Image 1 (cartoon, helix red, strand yellow):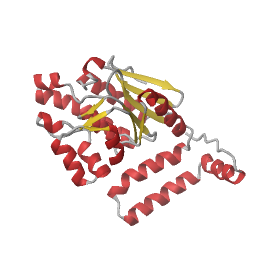
Image 2 (tube, one colour; image 1 turned 135 degrees about the horizontal axis):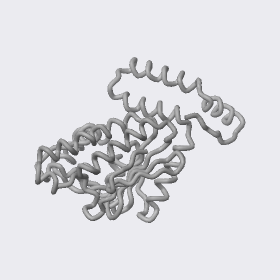
Image 3 (cartoon, rainbow, N blue to C red; image 1 turned 30 degrees about the vertical axis):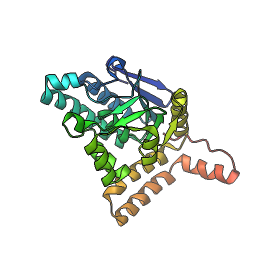
Image 4 (tube, rainbow, N blue to C red; image 1 turned 180 degrees about the horizontal axis):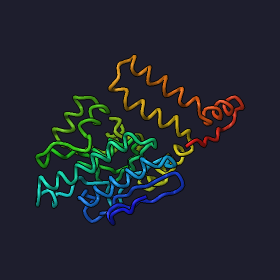
Length: 261
């Protein structure tokens, strides 16, 4: 792994990589250095097939309260370019990498923080987490694929309401809307996130990677195109040791021990 900026902690526990934003004094507001470090870390992860799950979280009292408004106010265009470039690269890398990505959410999840959370494959929120897309409140439109992810998760009409009104909503509402997978007690967030990451890391890597890819491309394909993609993905999985192990374990009524990279 490349060295991260002081504002981004990168750690690894076996096949699980954790990226933690670490600017707690400003609720992890995203600045240029952090954006660059995040893109570098995502490049490293995407090229390492031994990574089986990724956790993205924030230190202190929040996941992320959006972009660094001080930087944006001082140099609106320059700061926006410097933030958006690496973060948009990172969003594509997160979507296309084999490993599933989990957002571990607490405190404020606002603006770029919400867009980033929506771009992850899973999201677990602590009770008490507050969400807002927020961009309209400072007179701008969204970035980090917020306008791509949100309508796909909640539908166009609700997405317009969330985006254009800029209102806050709580974790229970985020769960109801399908923006998060689970809401857990605040004290259990870290353990529950790690448990999910470990479960995914124990799974069949090729099957998980193919299923993730198939779900993402399904919106761009017609039925015949998606059936062709499914056939190719299934045949790719069928050639792996994990498929043979999965069949043997099912027939023997035991837990499978997957191991393909």
